[in-house]
Image (cartoon, rainbow, N blue to C red):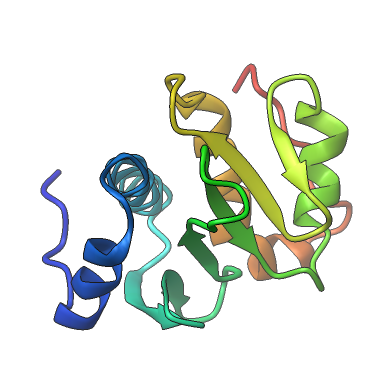
Length: 146
């Protein structure tokens, strides 16, 4: 799969990140697109939310995924999810030994160590299908074995 070309405003946002953070965030960006394609969630819109790269499904079957880096935590990239969803709580219940969380809104990904792509792919998949899946009762449980 080839990555979609980055809209100029989003490319500028990536360029503003320090090099190690930008490298990790671009890796996460690629993972979002791979997961979206594998789940056939439709066209993925790449835009800015709060000045950071954000990914939305169209039609609205998923929850927005936003990627960022903060000076207060310079050794981590962040995957921000809507705090009004159950996503972070679900991920914390399933992956608390493998992932680091910030409140009910973010997964922190260390810049130094290789990211846990398999686990992050499951998280991205759950976010990209959140609205579609929450209509199905009961909600599917995340399973790292899938």
